[in-house]
Length: 157
Image 1 (cartoon, rainbow, N blue to C red):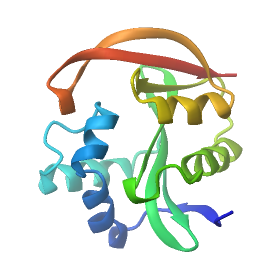
Image 2: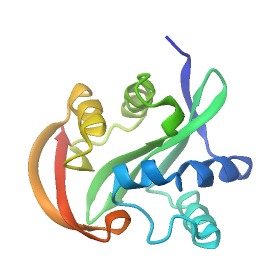
Image 3: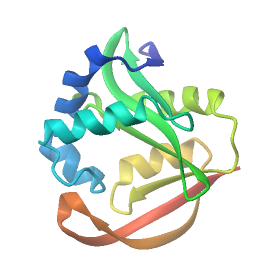
Image 4: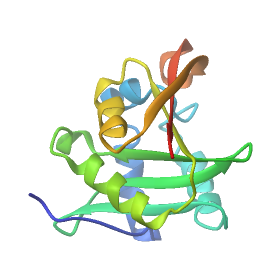
C-alpha cells in the first residue's frame, strides 16, 4: 500500500491544488464547488483565508511524498465538518480513506459531519468505511451542476 501522509499546506502547493480542483470530471462529481473553479484569484483568496483561520485544519495529502490532494476540517454553524479533494488520477487507490483516517486521528471533535452529493458513490463509500453514518439528505444548490441536487449528510460520533 502507498505511503499516504498529511502535512500543512504551503504556498508551493497552490498551483497543483488549483489544477486538481478545476479538473472538469472531478468538479462534476464533487458538485459542491467554487462558483467558478477556473478563477485563480478567488481560489488564492479562499486558500489564504483557510490557511489562517484558527478553527480550520487544512492539510496536504501526499502519497509517497507527492501531493495528491487536500483534506480539511472546519466549523460551520457550530458543527465541525470534514472535506477532501483527491486528484482524479489516483481515485480508487484508497488514498482518500487513508487520508481521512489520518485526519480523524488528529481532529478529536465529535460529532463530526461530512456531506457529499448523493450520487458521489465513491466519496460516500469512503465516509461510511471511516465510520460515518447517514443522518439525512438535503436538497442544496450545486455550483458545478448549476442546479439543486440531493446531498447526503453523514455523522461520526
